[in-house]
Image 1 (cartoon, rainbow, N blue to C red):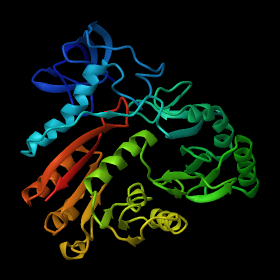
Image 2 (image 1 turned 60 degrees about the vertical axis):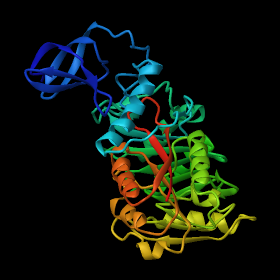
Image 3 (image 1 turned 180 degrees about the vertical axis):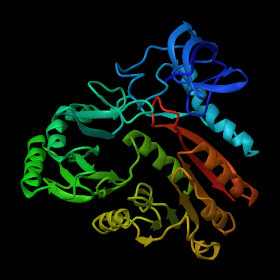
Image 4 (image 1 turned 30 degrees about the vertical axis):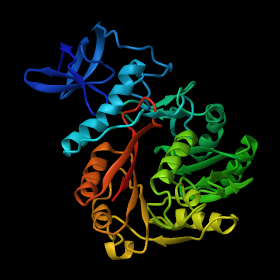
Length: 412
């Protein structure tokens, strides 16, 4: 229940895109608002829900999706294009400033609307029927989706057909997580949360439903249940079959820009180490001109790299190594055999690995990140060790969310 209903004046946007106001000497976070707006809102702790927009900002835009405000997938569709772009850049500039870094930021590369090739959906049983869609804002409630300004049309068209699969696979009480990925050969569907005691008849029914939908592959709890054809993603000249539910960049357009920037950062290198290599997003394209050593903590991604590199003609050798780089980073001595490094860690960054990289003799590095704060922290170590930042490029592939990708080129 709300504590009280009050008028609030929004002063600025926070790191997650929520408006920030002050009430009785404390900060209050107000989603879906803009600086300068006055709102009537219900207070609940340090958060508030708008019940009336009293004075709207001239920078307020019409949302691109009918579910905006209810669905939790987007939080910035109410910003004008100019305000939105400025907010994304400010996240990077602020993090760099806090780390004591003065750097130019190149123009942002924007992924187009409806370019997300993967959708992470939820499904559960509710009052005898199946609900499937995205989670609501700050809740576990599922919002059924009829239109979406973010995902690719093929994923949008898939949604009605997923109801039959969810009706078979969903447990009595818990929710399913459904990762649907558009590949060159069809949709790759990876479902987790399926009951371990699912009957043989139910599994057969799922395979039949997958065939009816024309899925390339159906995986249940990480195991392939049906495969009409191998799902294929193109990485450089290599065709890669990613592991079920494995990591990949959100949009092909953004991935292409990131690969180009990374390749430019390490151009001329003969031996490259790719740290946190995933399923080969950078390793395989870079192998067109240099030998690559791909290091990754997940064996499934490395297996995909190895298989793709072995059947791709005309590329340099690609070797793989399974290693938890957060707990056991490559040492500066081990890094000494390479001319250049690519590092693309998870959101928490790679403080230990970056420290070793900074202390190595490597002359070129490409840093990729989806978290401006940990990126700035790790970049500071590289700069303090004698690297020069040659270019820093934001890439917006998570449209209308507070997240932004960064690609930086460094030279010692």
